[in-house]
Length: 509
Image 1 (cartoon, rainbow, N blue to C red):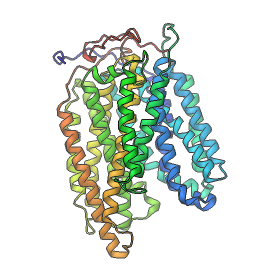
Image 2 (image 1 turned 60 degrees about the vertical axis):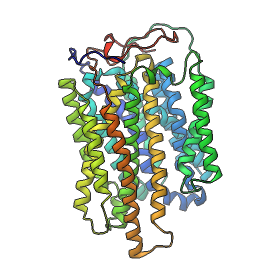
Image 3 (image 1 turned 90 degrees about the vertical axis):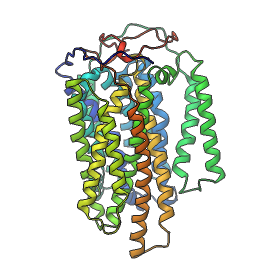
Image 4 (image 1 turned 180 degrees about the vertical axis):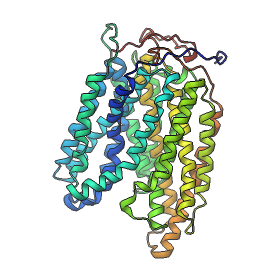
């Protein structure tokens, strides 16, 4: 696709209260980011109280599966109806499920309520990023990247700390109840502060039920295969192979369905309108692989090999997460000032590759200082890549598809992370014999960690190639230019590339 030469469109800052409005949206998004880390810390206590150790993995799997399946549905509902109301509904579902999970009296009940929680969580991320895309034009979005990065860092680092604190002093049920006060504040905040222009009345939307059904089966098979492969079942077992076949066949059927329905769940035009969108998704999936893998295996290495305490598990990731915030702020300010952004995913993926390669050299003699420096490289790479890839995707789609587009980015980042963790788990367990103890176990964990980050370096190198292929088109600016004007929903017309579109105020259904 031919793109116009790079220009610097005039930028009119968004309304002065947009930062306060976004703060409420961020609070709601923080719920989902904190939850898994809090619950993970509380799981040993939960098992001692409820029993059901053999089903413990389903507490996480049910949540992840429901989140992945529901994410594109929430995103499309926001496009078809009111983004604000759909987002508030997802927060309400998450809070109700948190209340029920905290009151669970058996492991079976807890798994059911965790699945309901995952359904709500699917709308938190998809709706939150879609609202950011509507409220803030891409050229100005860099000024707010620090907020998103800070929320992410707080979720990763604060989750284990909050989980350990509330579980130790208040009991495991408060690992779920702690969501209620924060969620209620977020609900009230968004209800009072978020104001979106009214959208013109439209014909009654038609829900893509066929697409929802096929995608549910497809994502379910993919997530289960990624979760079980190499741990519960061997990669070559008939169960994993069957799940993989269902996922591949389901994806093919889903594409065929989406090309024929008037209101597709994930419109094909989103992926074909501009090549920057699939490139942005690829970058986000790669970052998801590194983020999930680092959050799982770095604390394990530091606790097992370097002798750190489990109670400080949240602090162990600070050398990686603080640079994420710093890099995101730097990249955002430069992008807003100059309109240039391609350099950041290129530099970010290069730093990610270097950081994961250096982490792959760790052994039993590696000091905490050296490990922290290498983690900082990874954090800088994530900070330069993550938010820029999201902005890249947001700048490549029409307003009418913003919810579906942001759902797709979150979906592929989650699937990328899940598949990456599955591969990492297989590599790690091969290096760590179940019978190893003492010093041999420390050496085995160090070897397994090296294998994990060596594989991660390969993923980051592939992401570097994707970053080089990004086309740097002008970022939209202007008041209310965070989204593009509507254009005949369901008309079948091909969307114009983002760089050619006007900057009219958004309208919300």
